[in-house]
Amino acid sequence: MISDILLTIITMVFALMVVFSKKTVVSALALLMTLLSIAMIYFQLGTLFLAAIQVLVNAGAVAILFVFVMMLINLEQFENNREKGKVKLVISVLAVLVIMGIFALIINNNIEVLTANNIPDNSMKLLFDKLFSVYYLPFEMATVLLLAALVACIVITGHEKAHKVELEESHE
Amino acid sequence: MSSIYYYLSAFLFCLGLLGTIFKKDLISILLCLELMMGGVSLLMILMSRATGVLESQLIVFFMIIISACEVAIGLSLIIALYRKKQTIYTDDIKIITE
Image (cartoon, rainbow over the protein chains, first blue to last red):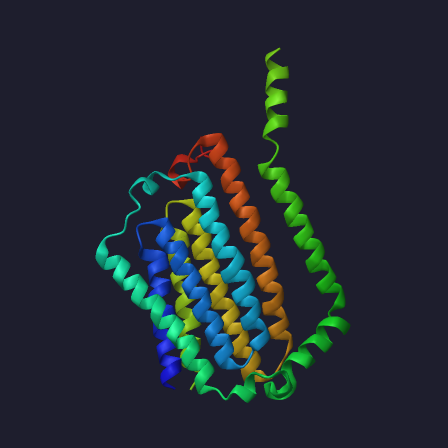
């Protein structure tokens, strides 16, 4: 009960930071913390597999990708990226709260719950049974989609040399 | 007492929509889209819990994959645009209206 309200408040605060912070880097890091809080909510609700996937893919890859692209683009606001002391304090306190929340959840739950044999309702086994029997084709389509996205990213961003050659030819 | 999460998912979606409409640079718009995606997938998980239907968890699984693709392609489009126009602000990009 208390942990539900605490998690909700933390998620809301970070979500508000995503939208209302002036600097894009701060909003990207706030998005990371929001996704981590959502992963904690998944964990609280008993969907362990999706919590892990959320941490690995959304928080681990996507949010870092945002920061990486900001580095590449080199926005003007990066010149003065030293935060004021108060903002830094608030961010660090909230980050510490989230990490403490993770530990509190792990300690509050019995450790037995976390072992693979005692997953509530055996839901992960059922999930994978469905995923690899009934929904096998969509799963394969998802892998093809990922491959297509990979190729698309390379094509969109990496054809500068070819473009230059075309330009030179047109000048000639 | 997980009903508070329903309000949270609605809040996340509305906040993301607000940011998508009012933000001026493309990276922030993508960030807000991710926020909306988080709200929707949270609602899906809650629905799966309330009804006991496992398919909605699978939908969340596929949504995570699709959102990763969306972010990757969106960011690469932003980089391509930045190379061409040297800006990522939506006010500076008026290709259609010009």
